Length: 418
Ligand SMILES: NC(=O)c1ccc[n+]([C@@H]2O[C@H](COP(=O)([O-])OP(=O)(O)OC[C@H]3O[C@@H](n4cnc5c(N)ncnc54)[C@H](OP(=O)(O)O)[C@@H]3O)[C@@H](O)[C@H]2O)c1
Image (cartoon, rainbow, N blue to C red):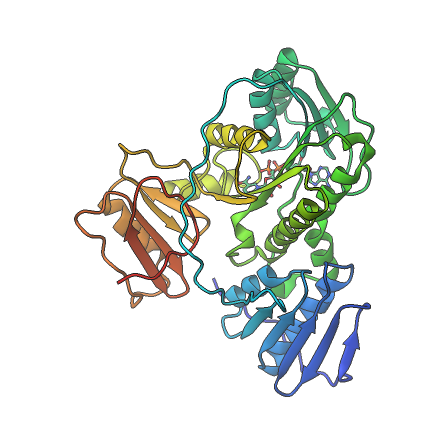
């Protein structure tokens, strides 16, 4: 599918367009420079969208400079939609750029679940959604008391979801409050020490059709919800937060621009909270598609059939429970594409395309590489006969594959080999 930018005739503009105190677009014959500030502000979506469209219309490069506001994910989504768009993101002093340098290939093993621990009061925003209810069922079985916050009314749930909620309520104390968490958080029914922020929405549209106002609404929703929850007096006793992000924020697909940006801003807000409140743990879990439940259920069913790794709900809720446990050391940001491989199971993973994919044998790896290859001419390092665990990543026009130990699980680009 190809998206063609809407006609956007080059307009004569003043050399400097100011949107708010920190956000500006500088137009010159050599390119467009969008300058945002230290954090995302109302109006930034329109400024960035104007910059992207202006760069396309004039056929000049676009540079985004900011001190933490974000927006790189939107540039990535735009350049998927318009391959001729040349853009870069600069974060002064942080050496971040749109074309990231190869990160170090690091290994991380998720800690094993630790039994015991006191039942906690857990709040789940988006608690009546597909993942929220699945998680509620898991946490109820462990004896935690639950406070589900959702803007959906419980009475409006489909019958199956209502039955699921009733089953949860039969196991533990559950209070459901209807609330838009970006606006106001009601008083808590009991002391809350853990929060899962899963409220979010998916609104797919090509950037060529998105208005600044649409993007504005989507962009700040998840980060704004996290901020208002954590700042609410009802949650003053919080010790641990797991915010649900998405792999789309790292490598977005066409039509995911707004969703990618919302998840990038969520990650940035979580980083700010970590600095402001060292006593509270904030983990951002960036998932690929969950199978069979939630907003991606339909797409996940198709992706799963095509061989992509999708998050099995039982594994996903178990991992969330583990990430919530403040006694455990886990990374601040973690990208999760599916179960970790085990020593006795040779696996292949392909990342960078809708999260990651697992395959059990060489034939499946080859099929996936073929499926993911952007072009037939893409270089591909064949897997050696001794490689038991095979991983691959599709980046730009290259498919990288490599063999590695079964304990490393990481969706970042490995150092280039071969
Ligand atoms: N499902 C996946 O494959 C997947 C993958 C990666 C990440 N995630 C993330 O996981 C989270 C949960 O997803 P899901 O699949 O369970 O989605 P879901 O079934 O659509 O549930 C999300 C719930 O959050 C509610 N909500 C949205 N904004 C809210 C707000 N401001 N205040 C209160 N409630 C709000 C939604 O209400 P409405 O119905 O009114 O919108 C909905 O009930 C999301 O943050 C999503 O981005 C999901």
